[in-house]
Length: 337
Image (cartoon, helix red, strand yellow):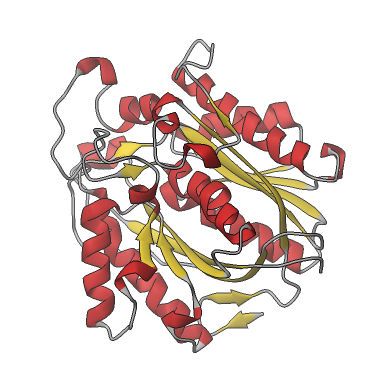
């Protein structure tokens, strides 16, 4: 059901019955390493290229989610996913391996919640019984496409962020045991004229604010409804900018209630500058760390707001501003439903 202008409410409460999270060696040294299902010691993953390694990450996350579930792969109707690389190549090839009917998406780092929102909508309206939803990123493949290859050794400004090497996947069902998806607010493009690809947090902050503000407006609820409001990968700079903007708009959000996936995943001292980024950032933090906290009873209601900077190498070369977007999905503790 549509509530307000841009929010879906899922009356049938689709269930996240299982998840799979995979990371690389840098993530293995981070703060939430114990929340990954699988961690690799080598960023190549025994593949010939970083893009093929990213494909492997996505395949492994999906396979883990299926293995942890009570169903077989043949029961899954759709795979909904995307990534950062040209024409979402790693995801396309992963979809070939999985051999599941496939929707390919691109919303940059907002893809994690875009795919989850669309999966929930389809399942809620009985368009499928089971859907695999997720995304992936790889530090070396993203650096090569959007900035400089890691071998180049180019110096980065303090506003830059570190792309997560990993993949996160969830299996959404009409019924079962697990956290439930109660609503989703679909974001709109917000462009504040920022052209610096090394300041994605600052560019994405207004998009996060726009989606969060409209989520509470559409549902007529207060921020206190949620235990946590979690942004995707704004990092230190974007998180501070967006928090100040939310307070200016009269949203009473507590300091410790407003957290960012880009600040959760790595330890202090890891050379990530302003924090983590990448489409896998919010996916692995949500499907690993946050849902584990829900299972342990620490959290009951969370709003995950994945943010995406929709620039490309071409748009950067043409000095275009960075259009940004954010999608919010509400997840609540559930049981057998």
